[in-house]
Amino acid sequence: DLPICKDLLMESSNNYSSKQQHPKLSLSAIKQKLQYRQHHAAQYFRCAVKLDRIKDSTATFSRGGDVIGLIMATRCNINPAGPSALEQSHDAAGKILIIHAFCIDKAYQKKGIGKRMLSNYVESIKTMRLRNGIDKLVVRVNETWLMIWLVQKLHFSVQTYYPDQQCYQCELNLNLLGSEDSKRKGLSYWVVDSF
Figure 1 (cartoon, rainbow, N blue to C red):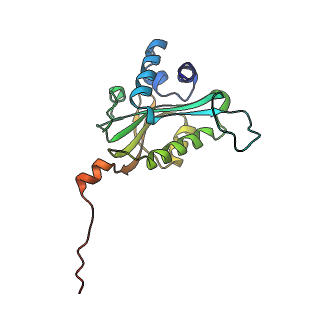
Figure 2 (figure 1 turned 120 degrees about the vertical axis):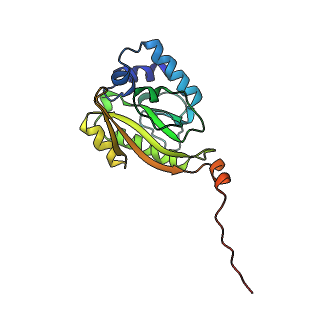
Figure 3 (figure 1 turned 90 degrees about the vertical axis):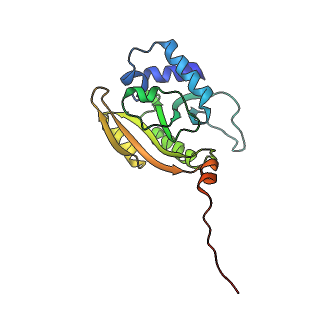
């Protein structure tokens, strides 16, 4: 739900895109970025939804529930350095996946939801059947030690500190091959002589 995602981006204290890197973005600019990223990089956009307790374990999710968190990412081909690198257009064949926003509603922060959500996100990226592989996942986190602890717990390494943005760039090496990558590399094989 676009309005809810926009509100999360504006209000969340863990939003690294709009508050720290782009404090002057208008609501319409945020909406435009959300729409672009949802359209061009939909498979890298995830929401956490709070549902009412389900009495029947066979029930399925149809509609409803509150969006309590989101992760929004796009791919690029260069190693992001500086604020302008995160503003590039999505490149579907890009080797680097950049998380632009990782937000949890304030009412649900510090309850383990963010850790589970990011962990699930990383695992889902690892299991995607990609045409072009991804070398690494990049996220910028603010100076909150809790966030640094969170990404390090998920095996991200802190690479760079940007004092002007008051954030750290953290990276997770994935080295995921896509179907096009394996065609270019060729398949491993051995020649065995037998009689």
